[in-house]
Image (tube, rainbow over all chains, first blue to last red):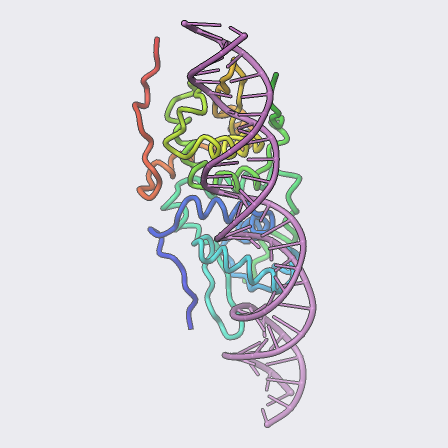
Length: 118
Length: 118
DNA sequence: TCCTTAGTTCAAAGGTTATTGAACAATTGG
DNA sequence: CCAATTGTTCAATAACCTTTGAACTAAGGA
């Protein structure tokens, strides 16, 4: 039971930019980046919207090729497609994340950046 | 007779990304970048859309802070706000332009890159 | 002054997006 | 099996986006 993702070479620049041009999705991406590749399930984004609404935004991100969702039981573990995006659009994701981090108008990323269980 | 532009510190990341997430506007930005800061008037973008439609897209770009439009007679001379964007979002514009340049799905930039009159 | 050129504004049409609650499916644990 | 947990799908709504042609404004040249 896998969900549909575009291949790396199918990721479209305007689509990625359009998808990132939404404050909720930008916050999700920023949060994922702050977690350094640790997979998160949908519930961990509830600060950014309702369950239904997150399902919608996470599908947009996945279909654009920005995130990957892996089905694990009843969970969908979400990660940033960092390597794929860097390969396709070098420097883009880093500059977006850096810019988002400097923007006080965007919702702050909660939690601890590196609280990774050993 | 000046047109409204946001100050550099008023430029919003989600707004800029959203505005660039449209193929026509991305093509306009790419074209401007290829002209290395030489101001262009609206007619020089006619390959990307009708006059009315360009007026719409150019207003979006200007209101987002991506371009600057200076009124010169009946013309509006358009430039990329490269320095302002670089100051606000370092590396973002460069990576977007580089990514757009590699994308064969986007309309090619016509004309000569450096045909600047002396 | 009259005409042309450059762009904007308007209204309308059609399409897409974001958000919501209710209902649904699928897995897991007791 | 039953119940709880996770997340999706659906329908509806309201807002916004893109595109168009017609009408308009403003400046410049003959």
